[in-house]
Image (cartoon, rainbow, N blue to C red; front, side):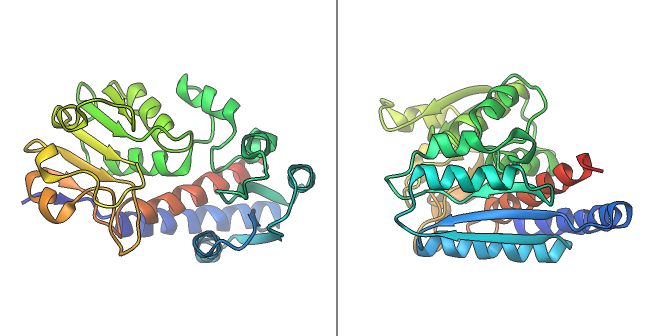
Length: 278
């Protein structure tokens, strides 16, 4: 039977540790760590994600400052708000919920978040540091993936990993983190030829393409580790786990796999940012 990589259970373990660290911060500083979340517009999924992150802050004893901005917000208006939060000593971490409306230059806004508060790992300078193995806050979902692999003692060094998806906040940083752990990494995407054959080589498959049940059972070799970073309508991920999980040696369920740990890693990095202010 394959190992179920239980992200929900692991996230609770992480949150329990963070509660203790937050208590120490409050005792030493007399202040409650604050995560500022910026929501531009009212995309239902984004509203839900921001609420979940606020609830997680509450569970570990932190405060969440929610900033809601109109769908018609300009890049300059958003940059001004980020500047205010950068300069606010009470704010330890800043999260810009993405995607943002099309008129906004998302990269410019991500890069405006100062590195010491970029707890979601979206600043390109932070990405550069992370990819070189230097200290930096990491993109939350790739960090969640690596934390789960470590927690469940899944060997990475020397393994062949295929990352399906090349987004700046998931596929690319996940590939960099795997390389830093001495995996042999292939990044596959919409232009990749013979994708099923590429995936069949993989000891570790990370699906981050945003297409429901995209990875088929016959793409997966026996004994592969399946990390499903997708979440789509109908509570399904990017891998056809109903048929593929039995071929794996370990897999992340959807829901209850990578998702809860992504939020836990955001909380963890916010706590780290608060500790550096002590």
